[in-house]
Length: 232
Ligand SMILES: Nc1ncnc2c1ncn2[C@@H]1O[C@H](COP(=O)(O)OP(=O)(O)OP(=O)(O)O)[C@@H](O)[C@H]1O
Ligand SMILES: [Mg+2]
Image 1: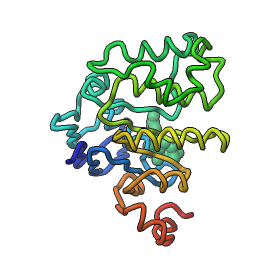
Image 2 (image 1 turned 120 degrees about the vertical axis):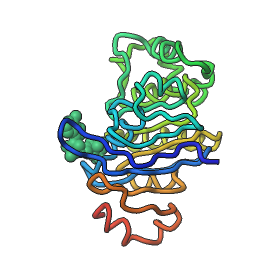
Image 3 (image 1 turned 45 degrees about the vertical axis):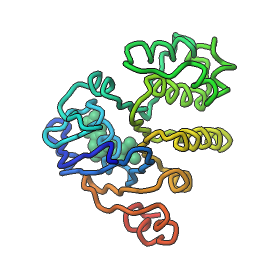
Image 4 (image 1 turned 30 degrees about the horizontal axis):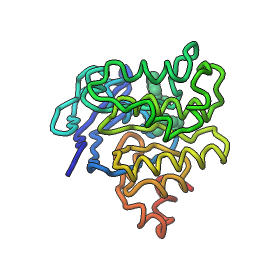
């Protein structure tokens, strides 16, 4: 079953046309990755889905509901969550307050215990303020905040960026567990190995255009595709 269907999305920053007729599809329970060079339009695509950037035209249908043009809080209510690159947690609140606050206005929510089960480190740090967390802990908290709202789909923008390999390993495992539990995810990542382990299908975006779609299995034996769209 298709959970998210995006068609003909055009987004701008001022007069700069950034996304050109972007389309993609995500099945329920699927992990899909969006890859592309720096500045290709990956974050803009996620922001356009979430209504942080309002697309000028196009359609974003989540579970039968048209979301294009709606405000991000309405889109959140409809079941989408974006974990921004810059993480956006409340530094003056502690871990548990951050989590509880995130879930407050959600129509449906995870129990705190389930987030702590996924990220035991957050449970240990439950009374620590946001500003006192390491980069990895902040990322866990950012993902935990998204999960508190029991989203139908989570959009992750470079969740492993700038983190030590040991933390990336833990976060990868948490994402793997989430996926195995049936969470639908759209993943933007520079870490290709991690992406190909998590995602089943991959879209390549190039200069704001959807350039290619491939299964992760195919990519593992087709370095020419990675070379063409990522230059790696
Ligand atoms: N707030 C903004 N105002 C104007 N232009 C922007 C803004 N944010 C991004 N851009 C431009 O839009 C284009 C797409 O940017 P975007 O952040 O979506 O790329 P990206 O694929 O996420 O790149 P990266 O890998 O560096 O995160 C780039 O040319 C970028 O310079
Ligand atoms: Mg980006």
